[in-house]
Image 1 (cartoon, rainbow, N blue to C red):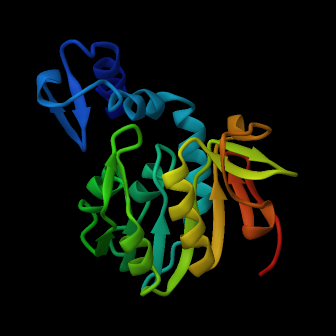
Image 2 (tube, rainbow, N blue to C red):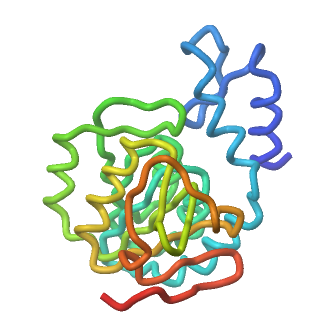
Length: 211
């Protein structure tokens, strides 16, 4: 049985199961049902998300520091990190962190702060300041909406602030999305398209601008 099948079955039976941080739990152990949102999203366009990450993986280089955004797209990029690739990976979401722990040569740095269950992510002003202590070679960003004129957007304002900080610090930033996000606009703006070196979808990489 595939991981995506397990996630879907859990999401379809919230009265019996909960999925939280890589663990299957009883609903009585957690409050509310917002934590199911990311489990449901994991199945949406999963093949396209993985294909986009296959294209993005060519920007993974040993002995560099990378930033990996939250959501359900870039978990596929984590899975594509070669076991012999030595990188430092900065993240702020439990679903990303849980997969990074499986990589033997990855040094993981997890940002903390207030927990947001809908995306299993964390955010805090003090950790945004801490992020500035790192030299980020490559930032891999996700988005819920991509409009070529209005820019990249997401659903949560706390995520937007983390994304903006990572982009400001990175030598290279790539927007990794499946094509269903193109043409959509969400409520939280985080970057103009010129902030990215390229947009990467399941169809390949489209250069945007040179930094």
